[in-house]
Length: 123
Image (cartoon, rainbow, N blue to C red):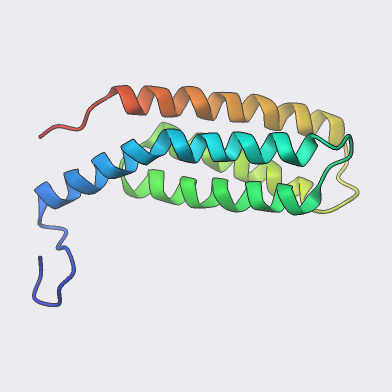
């Protein structure tokens, strides 16, 4: 800890602990993204509010994955975020194609998260 009560970047044990906590939460965060996608598409028409929720979940995961050294999760969550952003507004061109793409990207995110979780951080 630094003098101001915040964790110092020079504290590798603390950083590893934060990374372990991130990896422990990763399955739940990805599951929340998948659930948001399913809810957004469950009514037959796109629920824009739920797509917005999906966008924000992916955005936060993208940032966290970048901070905690999970580049594959970072890239996959960023891709989900970008497609969801386009679907938040009505009238998106090629909406059925974008929905199919979003489903594929969420599957890719799940695989990336599984791979990241199987790589235990060094102690």
